Length: 166
Image (cartoon, rainbow, N blue to C red; front, side, top):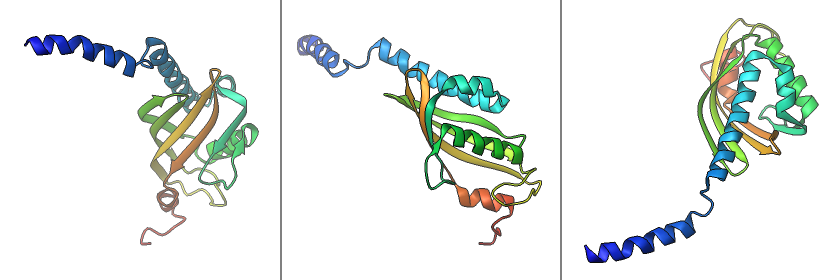
């Protein structure tokens, strides 16, 4: 017991040095970053373009699996308007959110009904649902860059663009 009582103060000092970045201000910043991304997801669900304009930096860049090149802020908005025209009931549901440094990783479920042309595929009326992962980078209280990944093959199968037996 004497040995343990001597080691405890040493362990606490070591932990203090190891966890210097574990301050309440860094934790608060991570929570603020997650809240910002959560607000963006809610604004997309509400199709609230004014709030989205507030949350995204003017020089925002988006990396999507359906585009060989990163999209600028304007190109990303055009893509989303086209997507929303094809899936007017489109919505996200956040499943998990993890923040570290200036990034927030969100795993979410996308759902919607294919009611308009999308990437040359005429409306099918089919419902789709898929899981996606988005990494959002935050700077100066704005979303400045995002990388999104989802299973394109499954998405196209749900729309009927790829036969389900393949």
